[in-house]
Length: 381
Ligand SMILES: [Zn+2]
Image (cartoon, rainbow, N blue to C red; front, side, top):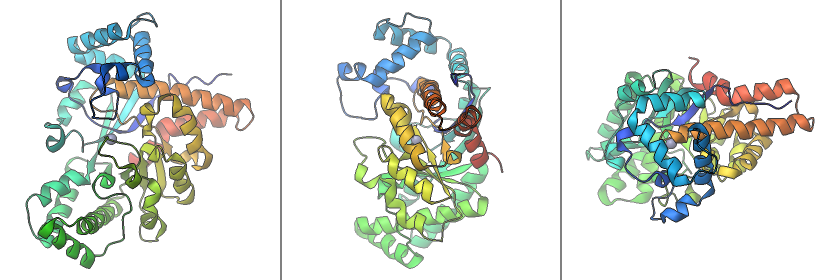
């Protein structure tokens, strides 16, 4: 019997609030991770875009071979016409019932604006929303104030705790890979102070790395006190600024392998894609490591099936969580959920078909990955 997950509810454990009025680019420009100037033809003829357009044609009850531009135009007409109605229909179509939102995007210093959470909640009244605080925008704001080490450290910890409390955050997020790479060293306060001084004096990169590594360790102490997990960006992201050699999750070895942080719950965001085998091995090795599949879903497109098999090779099913990394446009949340459920249903069919697992466990796997693991990790305290 075929396992149909299309009606299964979904918790999206990594995504971002968006502001409909800020959508200004042609639609196809939103379906790439690259900020470089690809031609419209390159983008419209990419498989991911064709997949999205076909799914949109179904959703909008247009012929499946309708011209892509006509589908995109109809979508934009409806979205602009009655935004809340369109969003309600879209999220209901994918059965998205919960979002865990990273408030580190959009932020003024990067996008020129931020998203107001009460406005965003009002757009999607039926959807349960929780938030997480990203370390780096906070740290960058404090560094810009040009204070000394002690003052910066105190302000950082106070603000972090305050943000966690004020926003009722269910996790802390770090994108340290973008700053100084994932090879976080276990820097002590003496090393951090020395690094800080060198960074502030002449922009020393080694010093900056020591200080940022230390700041991440401080955030882990906050996680420990509050019982919060930490999401760590691994693998693909905003290109071309992503230097993938600094984004491989195996670089987290020093941080994960010692005893000091074995009680902290680490989520490897984006499954380290394309280093999914490495991420899976870490989740296999350490009982305090989880894997989020966002951004790999949807951007790995037709490769999502193989990537999911790669992750399931070694990762306990209790530690894999669905996510979309949805940002800027609502269809990224919607398409990711729809397509992931289809592919995951096919994977489960195959596992049942060849006798690897039984029907009942296959259904449990679906619930774990789509809702239960995230609920247990973020929402059960
Ligand atoms: Zn993200």
